[in-house]
Every structure is written in structure tokens, then in C-alpha cells.
Image (cartoon, rainbow, N blue to C red):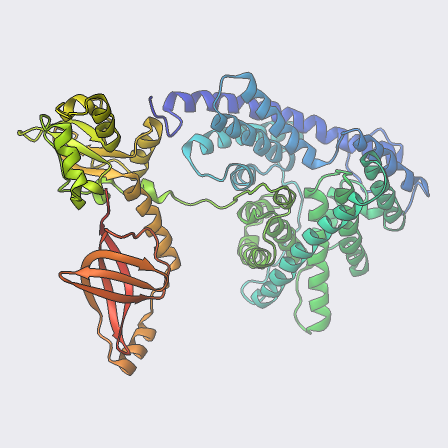
Length: 616
């Protein structure tokens, strides 16, 4: 079976072409939905046939402001939705639809879905870079050419559509602002802590409210209407929390709102959003959370100015930074929202405080939230989602580094009975090998015979006088010294074999070694060991050596026993028992290892275990 671990070049071109189409159409979809959202908001609250975004003002509809969200909630109850997030979701759905329409692999469909979502975000907020990064951080969890190239093409074209139809300017116009770097760093540090706990509190409150709605003794159809009723009541007293809120965010960024109104928006917009999402009244998450967190940043700056004389902080600067930090921490897409907050204002001076505050908030969220605001619901259903990605260590290790040499072989004319008798005699070199290469007198690899082949040969011919070449396999799957361990393991899995002869690529009949699954898995075990083992630093070693006179030493031997906290090693004719204070991963009896140790209080304490050869 031909192996294709990555998208081939011709498929990459095909996927990129599909991504281009998705980007163009997602840009048009974003334009249409963007205007429809503004139109219906104005129609509902102002009776105005306008596409211009405006937030509701001081109860211009009186008590009708309570009823309008309820109607919207009933619409959502029959599975409709609204808000800027809808554009991103629609883009992702369109990308997935294109992937299903075409003949694509699961990986390619995932890339096309991400292209649609990234294009939707880029076309909505005019943030192409953030659209790419968001798709990588929340949907793909990989940074590879097969996904990055289509993503960039899709978001670039979607943003181009935005520029043609909505203009080239930043999403939010922000007056020149002093971010006060480096003098303001202490305040940004504190803001990072505040934003981190705000993200934690918001996420926990959201799922608490959702749990309460699930306990209501009514049909789920009514949950959005009930939630919308609460939203309408909040909007009656604080009308700024209703609507899309883009103009309110601009006012916050430009310090046009008093601190009392900022505090009301921060508290009640968060409460309205929690009720909305918890009840299933999906009015979007991005813009409402941006508004609440921007108001939080503005209140924070004004509060510091009131407490610390001479601080003179810019509320707009802290509002922008908080806007990226809270959502980035809650969603575990910190990098995306560092870039996003910069792109929506295009003020390069914001980058340093954005990076600092966002990572501090993220660190706090990681400490107190096992899952992000996006994945908590999935985790409750038993679905594990991993948002972190790293280089596959098995792709970095070559087969030549882990293969065993000096492998025991059998001759092609050696009989099945002779090999079986050698195995039965307890020869450890044969017993621990489940398969033996068949090599002729000229050193040419001719086949491979397994223990199962030997048993079947004896069943068919009890005398066992057949040569092993007749019961073994001559159609060999081989590995090469310069292949990665990942490629070798892939060959084993695809061909349902547990071991591979390693041959010279220039001379495929010349066997140079042998690799099995255990050796490949030992790569991963060694990686885990290196990540979990904390090596003593210079100061610690100097302190211990000075107090105890310990001198590092090294021994090599065969593993006799492995237990919790100790390792038994046969060195020549003696057995050494070493204390081990770290996890022993991938080491088994029979493996040949090198151990660095120290004599401490009369005990030999292992400092490092290096596997030299493993069982076949």
C-alpha cells in the first residue's frame, strides 16, 4: 500500500484552488450577513431601514426592548442564530460543504473547513493574519504547508473582498494613544492577572448558568426565549448591552464613556452574554466578549488613575489590551488574539503590552481551567480535545540511530527442526527474537522467518526437514538507515508486521541492522523521560558534591530487573542494584543500558539511563 503521510504537491495545489474559491465566497457571505445583522438591529430598535451599526440608546423603545430579544430567542429556539460569530460559522460550514462535494480526504476536509472559518473572520473584522492563526489554534492544531498555504490564500482573498466592499480601514478607529511603555509595565502586569481571573470567572459562570437552564422543568425550545427575556430586562436598564456593539467598542477604545457606564457595560454585558449563551440564545461570543473585556480594561485604567496619583494611564490602551487578553485566555487562542487586537486598530505600539498581558492571562487560565471556553462542553461529554501541538519526536530520529546491529540470523537451507531445537534449547539470542532474518553465506538478505512460521512448518511437516526459506517470507518490507522512526513505524502498521530488516539503500540485499516496534516506541519513551526528568543544576550539584563528596560515574550492563525506585543491572558477573528517583520509561529486562550514577550515603543513585540496545 502506498503511504502518503503528507499531502502531495498536486493535492496541495488542488486544495489551494478550492481554498481560493472558499475565500472569495466566504468574503461575499460575510458582507451579506454583516449588513443583514446591522439592518435587522436598526429595524428592531430604531424602525430605521439602515445598514449602519448603532447600539440601542436609552430605552427608545420603552418596554418593547424586553420583548424584541424574546422574539429573537424564539427564532433561535427553532435553530436560527445571529451575531458576528455566525459569519465565521457559516464560512466554516461552507468550507466543509465544499470538502464534501469534492473527493477529499478527512485531513483535506478539515483544512477546507478551517479555510472557511478563517476567511469568515478575516472578512468580518479585516484581520487576515488573525484569521489564519485562529484557524490553526482552534481548528487544525498543526503548522504545516498542507494547511498553512490554503489558509493564507483563503483569508487573503476574503480580506480583499472586505476591502472592496467595506473599505480598507481598520475595524475600529482608535485615536493616537500612549501605551506608556516601559513605565506602565507594572500596571499591565496587574491587568494581566485581572484579565486571567476574568476569563476563568466568565467561563465557570457560563457553564454554571447552562447547568441551571438544563435543570428547568420546561422543553429546551423555551430556553432561548427565557434567556432572551432576561437579556431584554438587562437591556431595559442598560441599553448599551444590546445590539452588535461595534460603535460601543469604538467609544470605549477612544475613551468616550464615563467610568460608571464602563462599569455597567463590563458587568451587565458579561451577565447578558452568560445568560444568552447558557440558554442557547446564540448571539455570538466574539463581539460581546470584546465589549465586556474592553470595558473592564477601561475601568481598570480609570481606577488605577484614581488610586495612584500621577499614573495618567490611557483607558483606551488598557481597553484594547484587555479585549485581546480575556478572550485569548478563555479560548486558549492567545497568539491569535494578540495579533487580532493589533490588526483591528493597526497601532504597532500596542504589541508589547498585548503580548505581556495576554500571556499572563493565559497562564492564569491554564492554571485554573482544565478546558477552554470552547472545549468545556465537549469535555463534559467525554470528548478529549488537545489544543497543543509539538514536533513528532519520531520524525526526528533516524532508523540508523535505534536499529540493532549484530542480529542473529539463520541460513536459507537451515531446517525448521534445527531452528526450533535452538529456540527450545533456551538460547537467549533466539528466544527473545520473534523473527529472524534469513541471510545466505554471501551476506545477502533473502527473507525473514517468524516463530509463527516455524510452528506452522512443524504442523505441516512434523519431521521439520523443510528449509526455513520455504516457510519464511521472501516479500520483505524493509527500512533504511536514513528513514525516520515514524516512517518505519508507519510501514509496520500499514503492513501488519512487528519488525523490519534495515538494508543499505544502495544495496538492498545488504542487511545492516534490524528495527522493531519496541525500538521505535523507545524513542517516545526516551522523549517522555527527558521531559519529566529534572536534571540537577550546577548549584544543586555543587552543594551535594561539596557536602557528600559525590563523584559522577558510569557503568554499562544488561537490565535484570526494573521496579519502582530501583534498577537491577548485570555488570560482568555481578548484579548492581541502583536507586532511581525518576520514572523509568521504555526500559525492560534484557535491554543493554548505560547508567550515570553517584555514590550518595553509601547508595548508588542513578542520574541518567541511556538505552544502548533493546530486545528484538
